[in-house]
Length: 315
Image 1 (tube, rainbow, N blue to C red):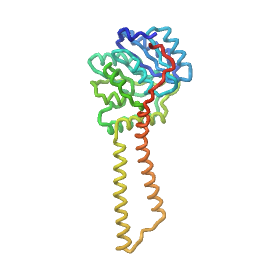
Image 2: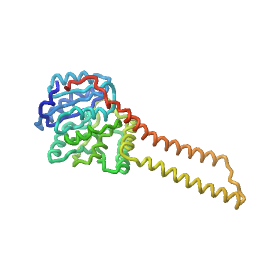
Image 3: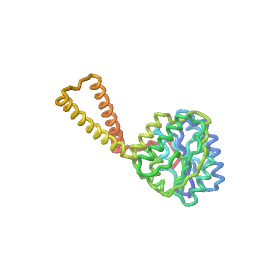
Image 4: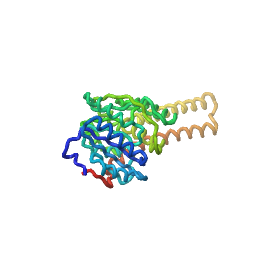
């Protein structure tokens, strides 16, 4: 059973898992190898986020074989960000590394992260300089997302970085106090503003299985990121409303001028339909943005648990 509450842990490794049965043995072996090389007291915490394959049984076997390996089995799939949050809440290290279980982020980079962290930084990001095995569309949409988000939030979010990073205990404690349901951890870390650094690495292609991040999930994450840290979409809605009202006012003036001065009445079914559809589209778009913010408020005020644990070997 887990005993880190009564002994010192230098570094925790948090690994969210979703259907990674073909990667777990290699992942666990490589993690132990690099951690033994660092030569610090460590723990590895796997968070099973509702896997439907044999991942959980493999995690249990690995925890029996290695006294420094632990698992948290969530009752269903709560999502990547919440699985990471569960690991952060239960880890006991002076620092923690977040790494995905698909082996695209090489475990060997952890040594570089820890060495940079040891220089006195509170967070060290792993910045991707190359992304193998990903489509052009995924690469370009990710690039646009980070740059658009950087323009929308009032603080700087490191470009081209995922959740692969090392966090100091001070920062972990601060993250655990953030109660919002719609998690965007890389945004929360940047918002905290602690002393940071980065190391560069090349991201590998996925060896087995397929990515759990579909385009729809990426879109949801993007919406959570923007609505969670920026109110610019709401300002955009109000400005669009003002501009359309101003435009409508000038159209009314022109219609009056045309009718009484030019003696020409503006007619046309096509122009009427086009203007109605345009205004209807703008209204639905504006309502949609407002509803995204209302949905976040609704989820937060319910105050439901962020996740439910079905089984764990952590005391």
